[in-house]
Length: 153
Image 1 (cartoon, helix red, strand yellow):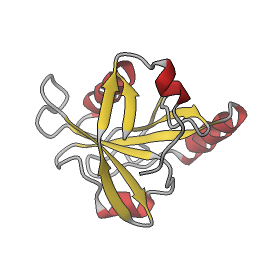
Image 2 (cartoon, rainbow, N blue to C red):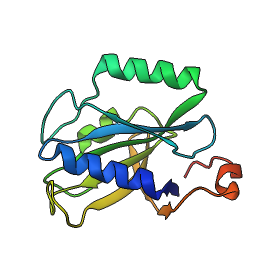
Image 3 (tube, rainbow, N blue to C red):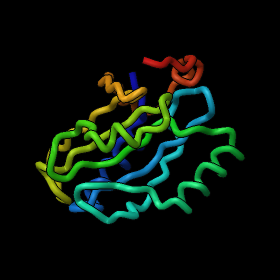
Image 4 (tube, rainbow, N blue to C red):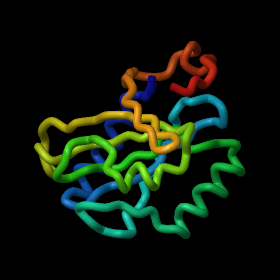
């Protein structure tokens, strides 16, 4: 299960709306081993495409170095789909390289860049196997959230 705070959830949705009609992408880092997404890092879709996303390699390298320095890891890797459902495409599955991460997809096909419903879903992707997981949105993290050990579903 992905536990995510409301502010981060809202920030991911806002980024997806803002970049529509192109796909948005980014990372939410957290303390290594915590499975708790705490630091929202919106990234530039270097492909600038409505059907594909690509992290800028220089920005991504800088982010991984920064996470390493801060003893963090990518807890959530997110991107949006602008014309299809929030389900990983074959390309998304092939590019999934963080088996411990939650892969969040946000579909803006119904609302575009405006107000309206989005489809916000989370998956675990490992060895090309996709498993949808429950999402728990909380107002803020509690001591129990912080203390819970990371679990891989």
